[in-house]
Image (cartoon, rainbow, N blue to C red; front, top):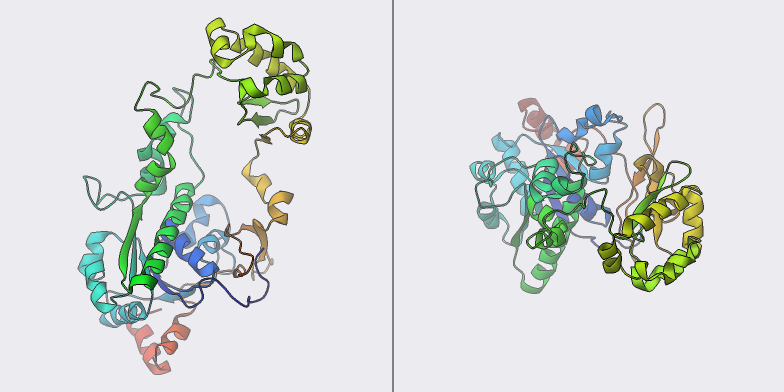
Length: 412
């Protein structure tokens, strides 16, 4: 669970990170570094990260004092608002980078080059810098400069939306930023490897990944599998293949999945639990291959469907789990925030916001726990430029200088 007080030791204490990134994947990577001890300064434009407004289309609060979606990806960071198109703003950013271990950005390459913030330029500013650049499609190829987002580069381009549905049906829409969250973990691991390597060699490096690369990696088995005879991942809905690796509807209208079972090895046990032991000794049902040859799979699947309709999903889960059978109820996302398994393990934690209602939200927590190290507790995010004055003063700027910079529009 999140530490309620500042822990004695965080695993990434002493690591300094400058983040100039928007929306989800790259900011979430910085958020993970921050949760485990890194000092992360998020550099926003004067108008702020557009993720601050995501509640408008995701139907959640998005005020400065209650912005849970923005908080997921940005808790515990320090926020400075800088206009890097001004000389003073650019100097502030370069001074921050000069004193940092990691620079994280998802700004497109051409824009970084125009601003002198590309890897080659910043190597001269800080030779030990870990330069972490997040992309949509990668450095090369015909789509290198295309705008890449979760739904396009991760989901549509890498294949799952084309296969994870019944043929002819309208493609399902995944949860907002799912691919971003997955890819942020890959990006995080790359940054940590680079920090470890620098400890050995003293050299900084450029780390990059993309949504497209992550989508391909996550769907690696399907991408290899479909290069042979099996061209589509989703079988026809009227052609079930294994009665002990299926999803069944229960008496309460809910579904339960029973998966990861070996038919030939487990059939005596499973048929006994389902109350149809006669199938276990019938040669027409001795293996998947035999059932396919004799067209008996549909028969046993139909019988199993009838049996599962005799109990609720929870009754089936309790019964099967008590007999050491892998199964799970198909849950909806609104149920997860109250799931006792998630709460007791600290996978979701309550966070109270300082708005008038003192809104409390069960927030998904960074998923890594250490026995000997802590993790920062969730902290609600605030307004754009919340920490601008504090950060600039720590860099040696005086109050009058800061006021002049605000008046000139260099910072907010």
